[in-house]
Image 1: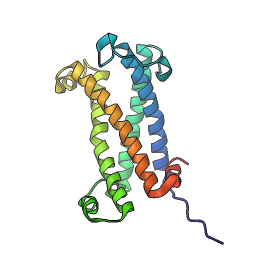
Image 2: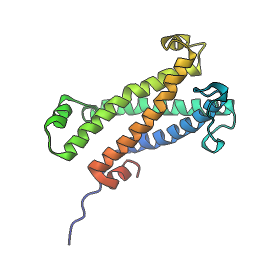
Image 3: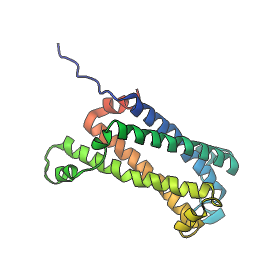
Length: 194
């Protein structure tokens, strides 16, 4: 009888991190679209509007309440996961190194190359997420954090930067899932949640 290969195992911290990210990002995306509808970033009030079925909050203030509540959940989740990977020393295996660049140039092993691309994507998303949080704080409390608005030049530039981080995060999540699937199949992806 053929032995079953072992199922991939993930720490409970990784599972919690992924679930909290999915829930908080979904809330931020849909409530952010509600906020966008109140004054579209592109085209002003006459700009392209998102159908209400894709939004959360019902109106501007409702969208803002949902958005900022989820922002705190998302940000604290990142902080706790960051502490976890520092304490557990998992950071050594999460971020790009010169070995990954070398593997992309020289390795014929497709799994090794996928791991290298995964670490590059994982490393590249960190400044994007920090930019999303930083720009979001400037929009959350522009009077208290006026210096954040000033860093971007003006309010509209701040909104464009913050808005631009969304599709980048979606592209990252897609690449992250595809590379994980390429290395470990559906079972690896499932192990991140169950």
